[in-house]
Length: 128
Image 1 (cartoon, helix red, strand yellow):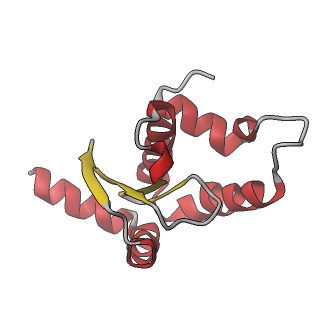
Image 2 (cartoon, helix red, strand yellow):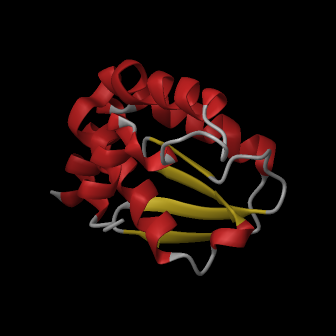
């Protein structure tokens, strides 16, 4: 039964799962773990971003290997993907990318104040 549910869930999140596989091929993470039904990976070769969650794939920069809040936050995005399925890219993914491109440390607000990030923190159990 679990395998059937995993297959259905993978198909439900197919667009982001395919993008996640593409990023895994590009960044070739050194380490990977099974994390509550997701594939958590750490890569040295990432651009300036810290992490990204696409379907069942979480890619974090290696500097976050011991950062529980970052791992839980990205897991929260994975839960969003499970809930929204193919809508995730439009409701969470694209707005998050735009927010990440616009936001910088000198802004008068926290990166985690944007609705997609607040929601991911809540789903991942992160208290900021």
